[in-house]
Length: 508
Ligand code: SF4
Ligand code: SF4
Image 1 (tube, rainbow, N blue to C red):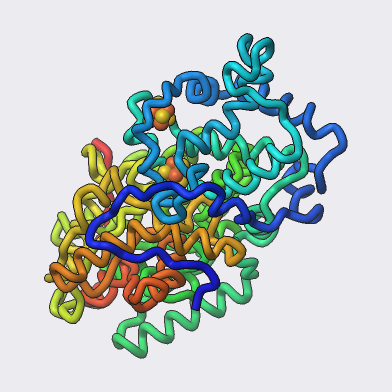
Image 2: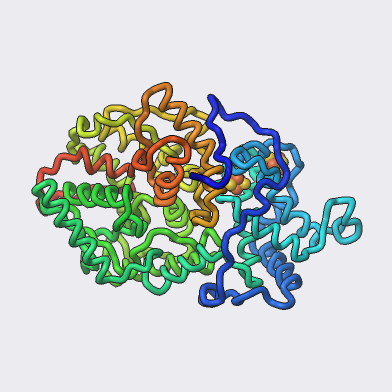
């Protein structure tokens, strides 16, 4: 099945002995001119690229204090070395977070520190040359920007930020990544990552209405571009068609239906994902965020709710207000933005949803905390809400639930292996090997508690698991959406009274 060695799942995760260069060959396709230029980058490697790259590094150092602190602060304590799923799965020592940082740090030292300028050998500083650039391109595309290593670093050094900066420096001299940049281009011009135009989206939503009515006998609506709706749902475009994502979308629609909420999707901003973050570009992140703002203004909505997408929630939670705010035209009684899990949870708390949990009795569930949700956001108004709320939603819809081992969930969660702009077939070996720690934890609860399915609230995790589960002896349909569980268990009352929409988490 694989033309590389799939890691063996053991009883528990062992810290492996490193093997030099095992992933040196791994490198994603470089973006062509037509994908680079619309994002504001040169089409190919420019002539004076060394000088420009250093200039860009200096610009980032000046702009982001954290970037310089992270490069200066490392004391080589080694606490992060065994924390990266890519190191654990590939054994390549350059996938140890500190070693990944050092690829950039050694160039930073050479050009921006006194010791590096005058005694480079003494402090491991090197000139930026083509070999270094190639190594950056390879290993900074072996980091899913999951931030697990930063949890264990005594100084909080965030390799994700260094990786984002490295990618931005590379794109700025003409070496961008095809997968991410092509997707950003589609979202900028068509409105979603899939390049799904408005008529196709309208058809898809109509088809879902028919399917749900046939299935339940209830006319659950999937409105598109409905002016004057109260809620704008911004969701990953995978939700429109792919399994298990679409089952999640059906779940959101049933929840809105039961709440009697007026809601809509926008064809202009039909994408929650924001790949600007993966390439480290706040400018591109902003451009995509502004589409959400414009859609909300044009449709005259009062609230914005985000669907199940990990990094989209990170961008929304951490940056939407600063990049595209102020959202003073929305209803101030609700958080901007709100996560669909918060929305559903609030209805559950208010006893507004009825479930027949036995509908999910054929499954024993576990939950994969997606990195971006776990380590870069929050839900609700209590610390840890991003862990508790999705679990509460699952438990409201299912009788059988077990958590994976404590050191693999919550803040310590392992990446699915496909985050950070790496969900591309040209990185399949990396994705499969990087999934090993999560697969190991899944195997533990499968063996010990008979877990049959793993739920997630991230489009990338769901797509990644669909692909990698079979490599480890599981089946691709074991991954489910959290709102798929809601969808299967919710009891539709078909009540849509005008006063039913008092859902959502009001701010005091
Ligand atoms: S951010 Fe995640 S993928 Fe990147 S080095 Fe740290 S643990 Fe590895
Ligand atoms: S844990 Fe932090 S300080 Fe220690 S080696 Fe890793 S990055 Fe450096």
